[in-house]
Image (cartoon, rainbow, N blue to C red; front, side):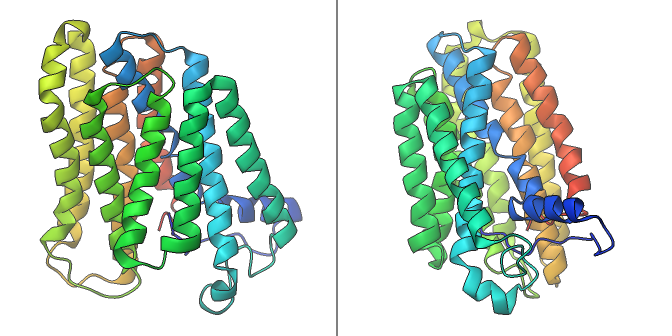
Length: 320
């Protein structure tokens, strides 16, 4: 996502290696990066439930790594494209401040791109095709659509939605994933839209509750599918999914209430955007845990633990 106002607190007294690592973590927007793998894992686990086909731990790890590499590729390309603008508006960013050279950024871009394609190729042809579509969307956003108010937001939403479908392609296809795809796409599109005006004081209206509606709507639309497959969902899995879903609703709802209908400073708006991004973690967990298996429960726990971790990381690396 086009979140470029990373906030760092590492002084010049730190060793050179630490400063370099901090620059790379700022470039890759670490808190945001942690919300990415769950998209693909949720897609794979949900299709596994609906199709009755098993998905292995190595496959889950593979698709998670794949989307992570492509997201990293997009972040490097984003800062590369905006480098001339950042020299004036955000001179502290890693590239204009020369903490990371353009040649190093180019190398990172190609490593992420080729690495993502290699992982996709190793998993299978459907994943490789999905990887190509995801790459096309990422490049379209960075090179063409980012400066377009609605087009950029929709394209960014489709990037995250495509990450979900990339994970699903590991197992197969089922129409039951469409409500989740549209819900995720709309949610991220709205977050991107809000982020476009985050650097000014404003009085947010009822639109701040629309992301909450995306979460809720996706689950409501998928109820008929879940009822049809209820015999394949254990009561424990359903309970865990419900808990995670409620957590995601609370996260998005509380974030909206904090800014709704009052004068909000730019810093508060950025906190709102960060909270919405973090809410993706319990949302992803609510879908993947529906699929039976020890690995899905472990993954659910990891995603929930990443939630408070992103809050801590946001003290050093701004999510927005």
